[in-house]
Image 1: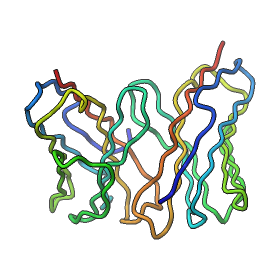
Image 2: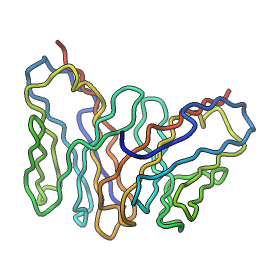
Image 3: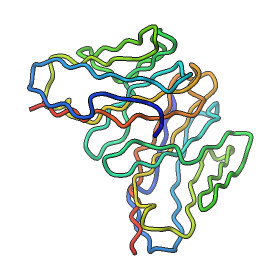
Image 4: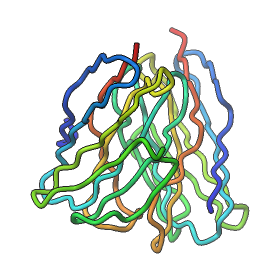
Amino acid sequence: DSGVTQTPKHLITATGQRVTLRCSPRSGDLSVYWYQQSLDQGLQFLIQYYNGEERAKGNILERFSAQQFPDLHSELNLSSLELGDSALYFCASSVGGSANEKLFFGSGTQLSVL
Amino acid sequence: GENVEQHPSTLSVQEGDSAVIKCTYSDSASNYFPWYKQELGKRPQLIIDIRSNVGEKKDQRIAVTLNKTAKHFSLHITETQPEDSAVYFCAASMVAGNQFYFGTGTSLTVIP
């Protein structure tokens, strides 16, 4: 167990809908990263938050947004869902704000858009 | 930005043999190189990492080597076992950076 908690584990929804994925980082970690992994694909970086502030943005669609709350948990909001958004979404956490430290992944949320 | 290339994309070895996965990076400022193992349907797990002030690091059957001049690093797994079968990802990052750059992954199959 990495100590990073993601909920829900599975999510099935329809096109056009909106969903929220939740992540609680390891105790003491201030950074949260979000990644998307499509079938047989690598890890696509979406966005990073550090201590409540957006730190870095990757290939995140405008339909997607995220935030990190004062208790350091983070939520990834996906709206106007399309079939192509079906993927495994991981969050990961690390202690500091620099991407130069050990990164620990949660178990992921499997999103299926039908 | 940084670009990490990983080879091979698939690798099959007989149980007991060694496996080597190679990654190259483009930005000489990168100084942290972790390796992750992802079993089917599970989360990526950090298995070993190396920083640029070290040329080699070992942990039991796993070792990582780094050649800063050539900008490449490799994962070596000796005496492979069926439970080593997984997808392995390399990554690179830098002190002043704000993201990890992942390779595209290597699917390793260890044949009993």
